[in-house]
Image (tube, rainbow, N blue to C red; front, side, top):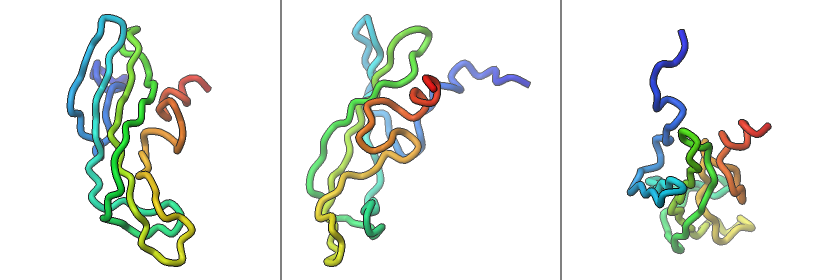
Length: 113
């Protein structure tokens, strides 16, 4: 049976919280933030709670009813306290959303492929 939920393709992963939605007449912007209190370093995989700062990633997402969608996510940067790790500062990864350094979401990339 086909999915009859009109919002089924327009979902936000659990670990992101939508803070606001805005519509400027031409596009929809979803403002979101992460909620992981201790993300893992991508090199040594050790969790860290020591915050270095935050920044915003802007990702293009699939259009919604023909309207372009942008996802703006506030992402944390953390210190890695593992002495043997080559990475001293890292940004938390957006698992199930986008690859590191990507400018679009995974589902947008998959649709384009």
